[in-house]
Length: 238
Image 1 (cartoon, rainbow, N blue to C red):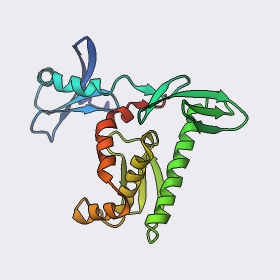
Image 2 (image 1 turned 90 degrees about the vertical axis):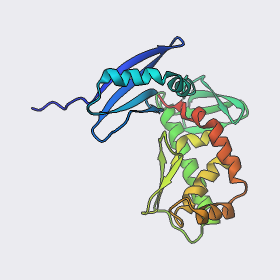
Image 3 (image 1 turned 60 degrees about the horizontal axis):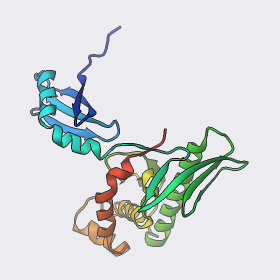
């Protein structure tokens, strides 16, 4: 039996009393050093050419630690969806309340997000299914109202850490579940954005003209996401 060759190394840097995980990965196609931040795994990723030593990659991470630290600090602490945990929704602090009940329901009010579940360990699943249902329903509503000549074969809920929505040439649309915690106009913008790609599969002038014809003030949503993206990415299920 052949063992898979490991092409990476995990190191740690303590900076300003915070330990940051650094994954140093060799890539045979790389020609230069590169550092990024993995928002999903909450670690720095240093990519180096195959012939470069891990020690040199680690030094490159240390040389760029200020940038890495800035990215890392914006992603912690994680906001875990669980009972009695608070979350900020467009400037309003709300608390998750998990209850056991005879029916599965999710209710928002001015102070709480109450998730009732028939099974004591399934509150997270109840909430996720509700989020999925809400996003699918809104997408179908926008599709019917603003894109009556278009057809979407599949609406999926994504868990991406690099984009809020996507679509493909097979008329499938993907929307990130975390957008349910953004203002409603932001979620609507992302849905409209992706539905416009069914006509213009690019980001040229015709595409943006189409988006602007379907909604008002898209820059308001873009600016909100630019400012609050990392906060949304901090929200996670257990």
